[in-house]
Amino acid sequence: MTTSGSPTERRLPHRGRAWLFGVVVPVLVTAAAWVVVLRLLPRLPAQVALHWGVDGVDRVGTHTELLREAGVIGGVSLVVLAVLSLATGRTALVRRLVLGLATGCAVFFAGILLTQVLLQVGLDDPFQAGSPDGGFLLTVVAALAAGALAGALAGADPGLPAVEAVPADAPRTALGAHERAVWTRQAGPSGRSRRWIWFAVLVYAAASLGFAVLTQSWFVAVIMLVIVPVALTMLVWDVRVDAAGLTARGSFGWPRQHVPAAEVVRAHVRDVSPIREFGGWGLRSAMDGTVGVVVRRGAAIVVELTGGRRLVVTVDDAAAGAALLNTYAERARGNAPRTPDGGGATAQGAGAATV
Amino acid sequence: MLLRIDPTSSALLFEQLAAQVRAAVVAGTVRSGERLPAARDLAESLDINQHTVLRAYQQLRDEGLLELRRGRGAVVTAHAAEQYERLGQALEVVRREAHALGLPLSAVAAMIATEEK
Image 1 (cartoon, each protein chain N blue to C red):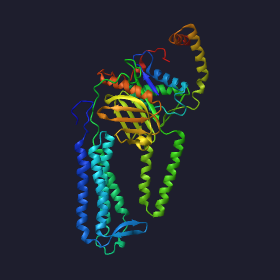
Image 2: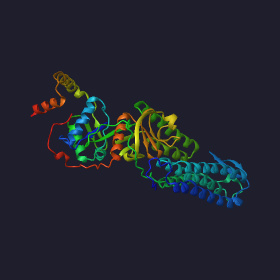
Image 3: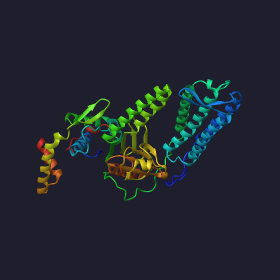
Image 4: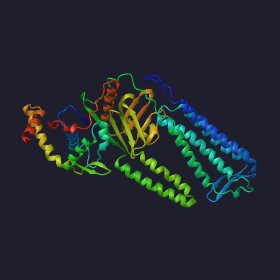
């Protein structure tokens, strides 16, 4: 999309999609739900159910209260996420997350309101309203699907190769003209933290099952347990620096963060505090839009990218990774063609092994 | 772990790889139980044939340095570094002697290689 090759391009990419999934779709979904609700309003009991507890409806109120509660929470979510959609999204991660949230939340709040209203159409007594579990589950599934779709369509980062040379003071790996190198490292919490994490997962799983039994709602357990595998994939990462750039992959190959060597302005090492800078661990975004793969406190590779983007990866031996990335960023600047030299290599003449 | 290859070097590519992994284990930069990158990923990163990487891994397995497990990739054997302890000490003596004699280590390496034949 971007036509300018300037490395200092400050304009946010994919603004059309930001308007579509951050504003237009959420507003249309919300408006559609409200039109249906307002038309059904005369057929609801005078006092409507506002809240369901363990034993069914536990709070009722007037139509105005119903509309005010739904309007405030849905309206605030709509406005906040619309503003975020238009104001942020320099990196694909943040763009996908915010646009997915904007569309998903609109579907979620619309579905909750519709479920609440549809259960009471034609009733005289709001306490006769049936269980909302089915409607809520449908709402959650629809919201997740809509959010995932919006996120998928939010657009990858447009190519933005760096033009200026890698700064002279950036550390580099000495590499012969024909040499090729790769640096790999697994990033993850220390052994002791790992045991604590497994312990926490077990406690959490037991708690969600106990909670589900207590409330007699399997729906609660499903929602609570779905988060566990998602959180676990973000704990251990394979980090790799090679001619293609830097790649960090979660335990199951996903999620994946990749920055092409050609778009690296420079890489260096800095101490990072997950809580203070990113508000937690895992794949994250800081307030300034910096994307972080942060699994522990301490040394991290900080990659400054074109277009004002930045990626931070907490990993041991970060200096070696950063230096090799600078070297390959420099190689990517020149148009020195790489001669692929696969196969057959083992058939070359014998010689003394280099130690 | 940083692995590098030089296709213009006279040493075979798989030997270059094996030598570096071996050196990393002996130096302790790769610990026992640690998993090496998958052969396919390593081959892709270095732009070489996957069989070249597998051949290096197989040689290290034959030396007792690695365990190759289906699905889990190549894992550094427990106590792998210990079996190199005596060799490491011997090399230290060789390095000191070479330094005292003013011999470059490449010359020493050549002497060792010739002796083998």
